Image (cartoon, rainbow, N blue to C red; front, side, top):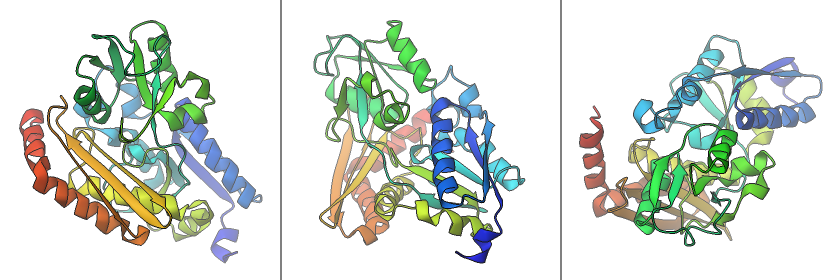
Length: 318
């Protein structure tokens, strides 16, 4: 064991205070505790701005970075050593001075259809209200099921399920990974294939972030790094980064490795689903980042540029 690890006697993990975020932090705490039994590992729970503003969609209040900023501040001022994030919440550009030190093995990356009355999206009657928090899901729903009403759905997993149970929605779409991690697999009515709903960039994987100058922590968390997952997530993030991926851009990217080959799929769409540009590439896992960049350029050439330009005008971006 490197001497730098032996000298790390205490690790503080910064985490959002939602049940799911705390589950994720405790999961990493447990794994690190098994690796380094002599190290004291604690969790600093924090409420972020993204958790506080629940009456507006993320795309209108600044994006998923709202879930990250306060945790990074805790790393910067020394209150915490590492932060645990859901990779789908990580902005495409990690701020200067910080480092994504490890990406854990992926849980189920698919979206889950959840309903108390209906067996599938196809079974929903015309005009049924479906709740989702993401433009990615909304654009795909509108493209394939134009007869349904898509309404915003914010809050933690429990809040979203409560709103479904109260009858505010006929169905809701959630990440399968979150439901499984919280022991709520029984709430999953059916899992949506990538063909039905292409997952979000990084969905199902956890990221461990620290200050870039903390090489001791980078070394310490390496046993939790899952290279196959990292190849996939890095390819997805590379595609999204070139396309300016954020909560304001309805896009999805999903990579998986089979028989030593990485298969990357991606799309960009208008929020109403009326214009969708999609594509895919296969290649060596080690070339995932280049593949992501290449797929993004391919999508741009096939019309994604026009969609992105429309979004810029609509959202008033600068």
